[in-house]
Image: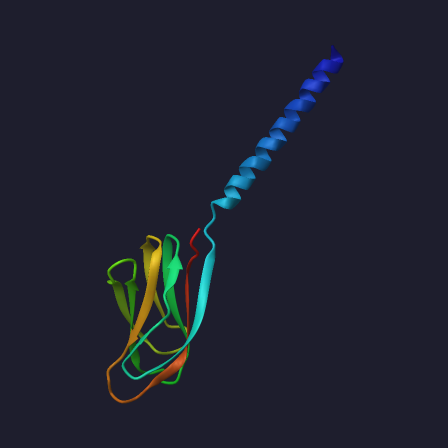
Length: 135
């Protein structure tokens, strides 16, 4: 009888351990993974990034370097699923660390359009855009 109680406790511990492992595995697979792309830009009026696919979440565009740090630029996020649709735009300075943020978006295919006044001067620099990777 003592043996059967020990065996029952042993099996209960194994079942509990298995349940913990299974719940940890499920919790780990539900996390969104971040992705990012770094691009070089050089334009006088408009420039469009390559398309990128995202999961649900926020999309950030961050300037890493720019040769006209006192000038402003527009950052427009456009959905390219089906008909191209402007999601939103922000005006930021073309200097290191300035960021445009687009929050709470459903996953899809997007592109950024960078713009500025057509004054004959070219903006040249690098930027990174980050987003939730599609699952």
